Image 1 (cartoon, helix red, strand yellow):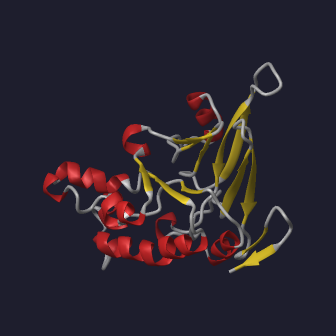
Image 2 (spheres, helix red, strand yellow):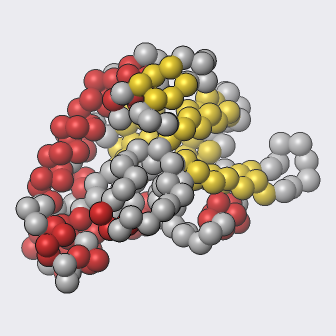
Image 3 (cartoon, rainbow, N blue to C red):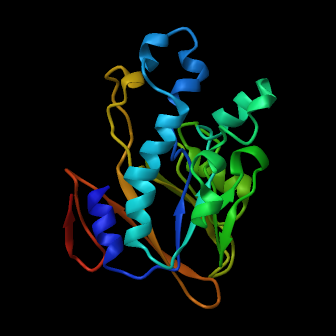
Length: 229
């Protein structure tokens, strides 16, 4: 993250899009209902405080003036599911309130709840839904337009064939910015890849995408400059 913040601070951005699962909400995960030892000491409040201090604050400092967009992922939705079971918590535990998005001036996009995407030019951004082996192919067919997402934490892309020079579109999973060895993986190998993507848009909506993979806390940007954490 330090390498990414360093890179971001050396450029001017119109928008920064976080594709969901910014908050883990592990303390209210249904997967841990019978394993309270796994969440000992964790709380929703601690999650929100950690995210604001370690991600949102430095990101805002690195990208002044840029619009900030947070897409709702399935992990943010865990709080919505809690409110459905205990409506008296409404307005207290949901990510958009716990992270102070309105106060910070961030745009909240309820993707997981409503399917709403954030669109710019000829690109649409969401958290993603499908988890099969060829998930980029599935997302491309389901959305029928250029669609970019996280969810699977790996890098995968698929282009749908169409007749005509500029009528093709793609779906792509853009990697993650998280630790690889999560406790719930139990040492299993994964396809996860630390990465982020840069989009440069033309006035007509066409764009170029540069997906930057991070290795050992370092990466080369599209201009061949090395950044490291």
